[in-house]
Amino acid sequence: MQIQENISLKPYNTFGIDVSAQYFARFSSLENLQELLQNPIVTQNNHPFILGGGSNILFTKNVEQCVLKNEMMGIECIHEDTDNYYIKASAGELWHDLVCFCLENGYNGLENLSLIPGNVGASPMQNIGAYGVEIKHVFHQLEAYHIYDKTVVTFNLEDCAFGYRESVFKQKFKNQFVILNVTFKLPKKPVFNTSYGAIEQELKKMRVTELSAKAIAQVVINIRTSKLPDPKKIGNAGSFFKNPQVSKFRHHVLWEQYPEMPAYQVDDMHYKLAAGWLIEQCGWKGFRKGDAGCNPLQALVLVNYGNATGEEIFDLSTNIIQSVQEKFGVVLEREVNIL
Image 1 (spheres, rainbow, N blue to C red):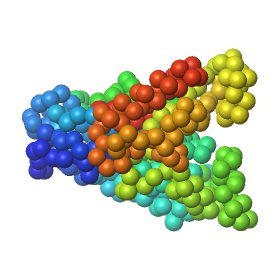
Image 2: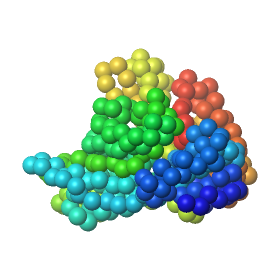
Image 3: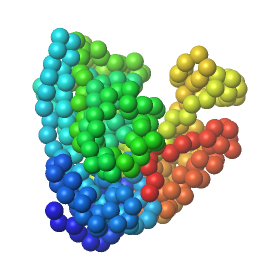
């Protein structure tokens, strides 16, 4: 495999940030990966940086590590039992291509996750989710290569320690594994999740009388395209912040002051607030300074209008966090990975 030098990463991150990698290589198989990891160039600056779709990262500086782009491909149904299909997808596949594969072949369960940018390999790392469904709800297992032990390890649901946009790969095992493939367990008997108000409204608007995975997928696509800018046109990484979770008492205090504030009960003691609403109330929606801005349609999305630097986007996010904390006493957490 060819290792390139001083490669711009602008085409490889959806924010469109123009930073460079000192070394850059691609791998499309486990054998390719193993060969690259034996090269001293790849390991000379600590661990290599594994790059997937670049849809959940903000580059604020040039990358001194060797960047290895995962281009492992393949999707197939590897097993079925009485209740479920087991769909295995290689980590380099585009996530939405996997969703489309499942829709076309009659496999239900991923339709609420339509049009999420990025690759399959990132889905368990982030425990991606949308409209009431998260990866943990459909996850079966994954295979990952340990960079230092040089072994392939299988992780089941419990091993991944999924949380809200969290997993063991972002915490305990950060920078130790390369995810090779992910297997999803999809129910043969459809269980459609339309509990989010926006989905129900769009279903009525589309005059859908009979629920199906394809109909829900189209609804989700319609909603996402109406609110979120296309990264091919305006640089962004989707939702930049996590929806914050607060105590029942803190929610009550805020609700008394802001009765129109959207909130979702997580359990008996916690509520989740809408980060986009909090940001909008602080006046950031549609804000722009230079080429760094806050999307005018969805305040949760920070955008690069052309030539913003990663530092400018990061500074904007810092200012937003500070203003939300000052107004509401709530600390927002970035969902996007900062490098």
